[in-house]
Image (tube, rainbow, N blue to C red; front, side, top):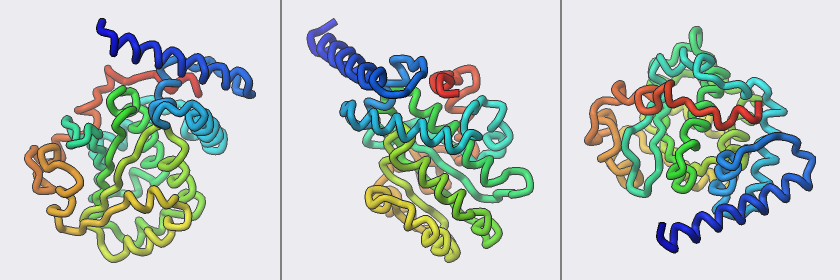
Amino acid sequence: MNSNTRSQIQRSKDLLSKFRGMIKESDINLALSDEVLICFIHARKYDVHRAMKLLNHYLRMIKNYPDLKNLHPLRVKHVLDKGHFLSSPYREQNGCRVLILNLRNWDLTTCSLEDMIRCVVFCFQRLVCEVETQTNGIVAIIDVKDFTLHHVGQFTPNLVKKIADIVQDVFPIRLQGIHIVHEPWIIKILVAIFWPFLSNKIRSRLFFHGQCFATLHQHVDPACLPSDYDGSMKPMDTMHFSNVFTEKNYSQLFECFD
C-alpha cells in the first residue's frame, strides 16, 4: 500500500468519524453503515456539512413518500422487463454512468407514472453503490418519442414535485446532465410544468436534442451510446438495466432506511 492510498484511507476515516459525530448530535436514530455514509460524502464532494444536509433531505423524502421504501427488485421487475430503463455497459468520457430512460411505447395501463418513479429510485440506488459513480455521477438520456398528451396528463403537480425532489438535493447521486431526445412539441408543456420546481443548477444541465444526435455527442461520447443515437454500440434493446446490473448483484445498501 503506497502513501497516497494510506492518506486516502485515513481521510475517509476522519470524514466518517466527523459525519458520525454530527449524526449522533442529531435526532437520527438509524444504524447507518460506513458504505452508505460514504455515498452522501462523495455526493457532496467530501463536505460533511453538506452531506449532513443531504442526508436530512433524503430522510425527509422517504418520510414524505413512504412508497419509495422497500424497493426490492421484484417491486420494479415489471418496469425493468419492459425495457424502459437502460444503462450503457461503458462510462462516458468523464467517467459518468449513462442511464437511459426509454419512454417509447409507454403503456400506461401496465406501467403507471408512479411505477416509473419507483424504478428511477431503484436504479439510482443501484448505480450509487459503485464508488466510481459516487465520485463521477451519472448522465441521463430521456427518449420521449411517441409521447402524447395522455402521457403529459399523468404529471400532476404532486407527482411533478415528487420527481423534482428526487432528482435534486435529495438523493446521494451527482446528476451531471439530463439529455432529452426525440421530443415532440408537447414536451414544452411538460417542461413548463416542471420549470418552477427545478433549481438553476438542474436547469443549466438540461439539454434538448430533438433528432440531432450530433449535439448529443458533444456531451456524451458516442462510443458508449447505442446505435439508436448514432452511437458505436448495439441497439438499446441490448442495454436493459438488468443486463448491466444483474439481480444477483442487487445491493442492500439502502435497506437501512426501510
